[in-house]
Length: 221
Ligand SMILES: C[S@@+](CC[C@H](N)C(=O)[O-])C[C@H]1O[C@@H](n2cnc3c(N)ncnc32)[C@H](O)[C@@H]1O
Image (cartoon, rainbow, N blue to C red; front, side):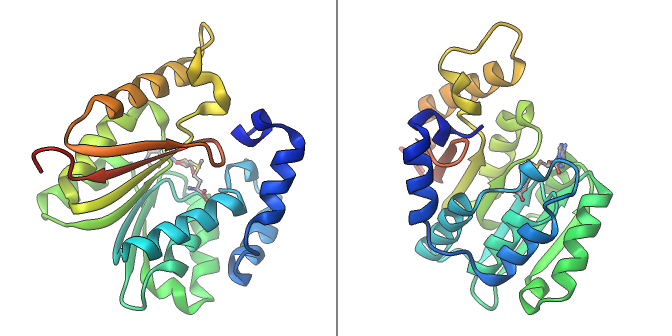
């Protein structure tokens, strides 16, 4: 279920129909991956369109992604980047990344993408030690680590850079995390961290399962 289902079914289909038609490669990838295990993890078309718009609006050139899966969000990001743009993405699931790599190898925009099979924290260690810098980051990996990813990526972002975290409304359960729902509790506390952090400007957007948009450069930066 997405947050759209909380709005109501009529509004959910209205939003779906109002979304710009997906670019052809993204439509084909979605179709080709519809039977892979956990295909529901693919970012929906409405949210992919929103990511592409954000990248174009910010003029981002160097992008980072945590949580590749079969490559839907990565494809959306790469398509929106300028020709000289680059996306570095990682995932711990070799089968899913293999699927994404095969698809990207058949497309010119795939040349913008470097994908790694490794835990996000290890990649962040490497990027930190090599002093890499990014304009944009999309984070869709293990949710309990969101606060750590936030701190680590904040240090890697250029001033004015944008981080986008997925699933921050966790099917609407963050408002009153049910007892025993560790993810809802973790995401609710992550959202509170963002609200109180003066190094960034952030807003929670009820698109898909909820996106946190976080711009580096609040008070004092
Ligand atoms: C929801 S899926 C990502 C979907 C993808 N962003 C998309 O929309 O097309 C989450 C992915 O995070 C990966 N993941 C989980 N823990 C991870 C970690 N510690 N480091 C890197 N990837 C991880 C999973 O293997 C899974 O493929």
